[in-house]
Length: 111
Length: 119
Image (cartoon, rainbow over all chains, first blue to last red; front, side, top):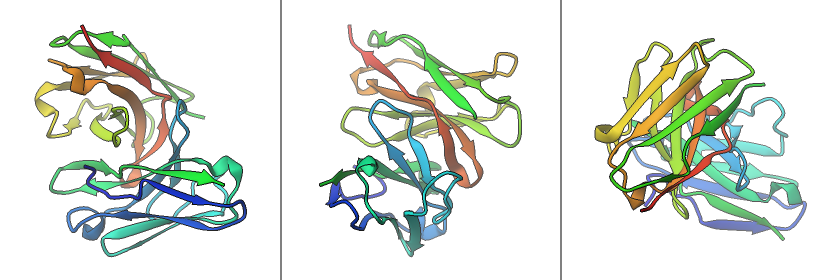
């Protein structure tokens, strides 16, 4: 059981918009700690997609956006493309565990 | 472009010590305020942060693994290492090394190495 809760899977057709939620608690997201998002294709290095809740590293398309409110965060992907098919993970810090925590991951399928 | 590469045995016997090394290229391991992390993922399960080390040698470990984890850094080789003692089948996982940056984000990762604990 992950400290941060994500839906196991989401799907969408090319061109559509999808969102992935990440639900935490008062000891992590709700305490004000930053949420970061990663894109992971099996067998490759995970890639930082969003940092500090809503910031994109250089080279990440603006189709990807992040937001945070209360004890939850969300990743939105607009203009869905086949290459977006991957696993997505949220991550934050938990003060009661004194360390970084991750969501269980969400598999995005592009129909 | 910073790159990280994990190396070490892919098979470890139960009760023995797992040892992995991460080699950093494309930049000095001592530059800036970065810190260096180990993260693992058992098959079908979530990512789990193992711990981090600063080039000063200061460490922080996941409390659930703290009694079995030791990390070290060799700035002359641009490497940092993980030792996990008394392993069991539950330690079978893909192990990643990653660079930590501000806000506790991980901005560069290795591709991961599968370590299987089995006799």
